[in-house]
Length: 169
Ligand code: IMP
Image 1 (cartoon, rainbow, N blue to C red):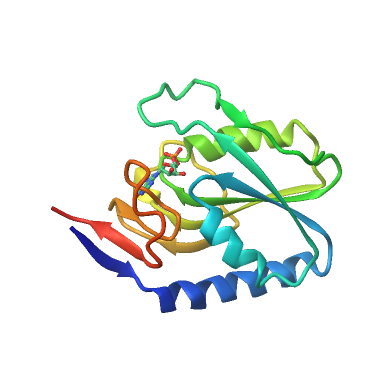
Image 2 (cartoon, rainbow, N blue to C red):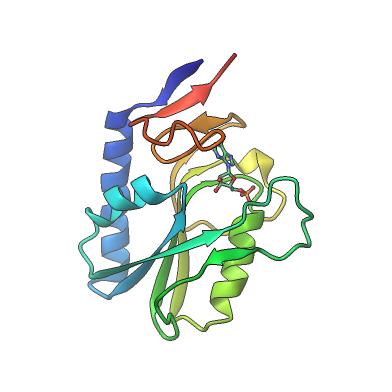
């Protein structure tokens, strides 16, 4: 069963706040916004529309770490089209859980020498962290619950639900 965990209205309000904060921080500088597929496609679509700086949107598909060794390398299924050397890069995630995926992506991105590298995640579950990772912009910090909707899935389903739902029995 699905029950509303974060409403559409609350998401919209928070996304607008994040957009304002990001716009202020980058002060008109161009940002390469990296959409981590598939989960962050809806969040990023809303977020970039409330960012006032110039935005170049690019996409990346990486393997998720579920059930994998912490020492493993992140597998890139689709890499960026943009060269990020010397540019401001903002990576957008749907949810940071153990932190393993984002840590690996940051290593890969850092090796390409961007001018700056920051992260934004709609959701964060700090109690599940295995790797501490700096998330500059966090939408909502939540407890250890499995959530779906607004881009997040359970076995590839429920991404289109317009709010964030908790999955219960
Ligand atoms: P991490 O490497 O453990 O931080 O993995 C983060 C990834 O796990 C996210 O990008 C999601 O794909 C997935 N994930 C973690 N928690 C949830 C959840 O509650 N709902 C849906 N996907 C989740």
